[in-house]
Length: 379
Image (cartoon, rainbow, N blue to C red; front, side, top):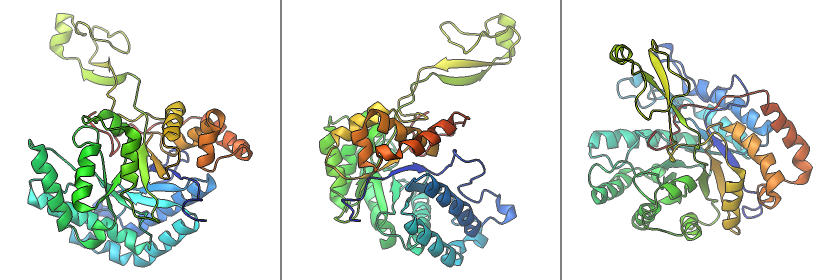
């Protein structure tokens, strides 16, 4: 199937929530001797879960090779090379299952840090992850997503310093590294500015574009420019998420002074439940922060976006905090409410029965991931 003819993919990041017991990496502490080989055994089972539910894009954990770049633990530094055969076998299975893989290094991986040691460590982290993708023998669709980084009091200098960090990266890193617009510091216009000076491919993030677009760029025109940074024959991908809309629940300590004064709640403060006079903790409700990801994707919002993007070709990493479960809900929603959009992802009426079974299984109950995602801004 040609790239243009192949249906668009939908993916999710790292944590599997739809099947208990699946892990995204070897989580043992260093004293237990964790290893990339063990992580690959874990994510091999994740691939089987993806295949069973016809999910075909997945973001690997940035901790897939535990402690592989820890500066004070040289005993772990060779684990990527030691896992060559296992990485090659895992990559072959991903290709057989038609699963597109990627990494999104943590927010501590920075190419524009004013601390040269941190930049050097970040390049080491990126080199390790790029090496894993290379040893998996994956094509140029397997990328590592990064952000520009911090502003450090000088927006222009920080952008320029990112270029220095990019130039310091080895070739195998630059071949896989892609840059994403973020939600609080560096906009889509900043990402385009950096592309023009480096050639780095760009990842369009829908929610981030709404959160940070001071230049007032048009969404479709910007999306098209981002997609145009990818070479012919290599399908771009984008990120999509809906913002959290529910009240945030913040647990706060009630001090002895508060209890003694009889003022366990402050004026205008909204709490989840009445706070007793002898309470030591209260749950305060506050409005949402729009950089936060919703558990699930709003199907009407996503369908509107996809219709705006009619004629453009890209895969979509869905960043709902319910992970794979959010996709198991979104696909029947698209078929139900927007069959024209569903068809672009290879979802048709004959799939309805199987999708309905997945959706019905969700009623048994799952829990969303409360930890901030790598792509979420200020919490």
